[in-house]
Image (cartoon, rainbow, N blue to C red):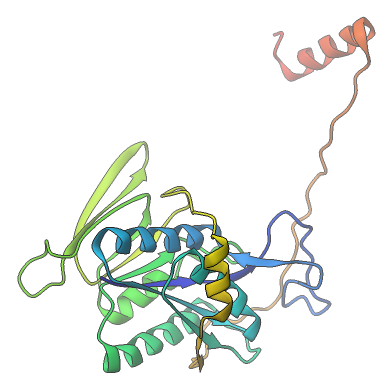
Length: 263
């Protein structure tokens, strides 16, 4: 099977988020970068599929030249090929991003054939727009299953003329939904579908030397315009020491009474 996994370079979580002076972007001077957690799981799932059924995994990202680091992280885990669609500093919303990915996929199909399965993270860790995978599926006319937590691919089990089939399962309102679709298809996976492996030292060494396919991203103006970003204000919460030993009991009782626990 030929699999494509689309990943995104995002700021590492856990640090304090600030916006630039013009309010149009996240200030990343003091932040590191990584791959969105959902997409880390997508890479792992693609590698597991090829371990079971053979084939290859291509990882693709749209971003600045520095995004090559995230591609090499995926190569270190076991992906076979990496493609960087370089951006030029303009704002790329979900519509523009999806259009660039679709153009790259169609160029690939014209020379090397189609992908059997396209995997995306369910949403990016920074923008959380939930749109790119769905937009790509619609543009390519492919079936799409979102928020998947379990995936079973059968490259030889589809109807005549299809590359195979897959069964994708997701959780919804306490129940499990199962979708059987023919390949090729698009699937967006959620964190928790698997536990991504750690890259081995030989894998890191190979990834460092591996060639990357680089191309200029095809930009399509996004119909939505970003006007301003704002970091939400929140009440800071911290621990309060009520006292020490028996002297703290009255304060503890008062607090439990205030919370309604003793009512």
